[in-house]
Image (tube, rainbow, N blue to C red):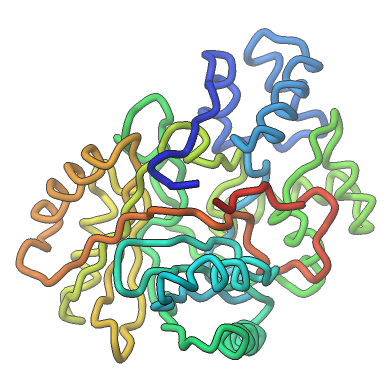
Length: 346
């Protein structure tokens, strides 16, 4: 399926009320769906049924957390220049690796972009070497150096990300202790949609429910978790266009430009990455929107606003999405039962 031609899931006002405000601040209580039901003047059974339906339809990826890069594990953005007659074959090989959580075709000579995640940097590098051997193709390795804005969510009522849903925390993220990694793995995989979902996590990790809820809140307060809530799939909700814009910025200017970029309305992600031999760019931003023209208009507006008009750049629109699942920085193999990937290959 083309990213431009993705068929959105019809979103009623009731669905929007479930999806939009709970991208952040999901209730960390023993019966969170009852709490949401009370806030929306609904029955708990209706909220559970709606969440289950939206997850089955692919609109909800999971109800869980997004960890800061400093929390632990490792992740790497990678890109391959794939001959067009091999694109489906190579994309299938990449997507089959359980450590790959995003895999997209983009408009560029480097046309296959994916994120490899793992427990540590050596595991990620071993996985990358395995994929290079399996495909016979080299891959760029573009490690993150600094995040300016990472997955803060945005208001689904608009055609682009008009503004962040909250101000990013200035807290310094703490690495997750080995003893807490089983809970972190479940945060990545997502809550079961049941009346008392945290009970399952408590039983599986050998903790009390109070301990689980305390740990989650502590991670949020410390910035270890960037957010805990409903993680949506934007394509399925009508945001069928997205573009990654990359800039070649002198190192002494990149942080100021990145911080300015992250403040611009319409920007959904902004971060600095390492350059590579065939890839001179070090500053990245993502823009999501309901159509290509709107995304392009945002890019044209934010480039001069962030002081980037004089720097070399490239705009890589996504044209096909082969895989989108949660990260695997803390999760071992095989897949946990609740994280069987949604069918996304075109």
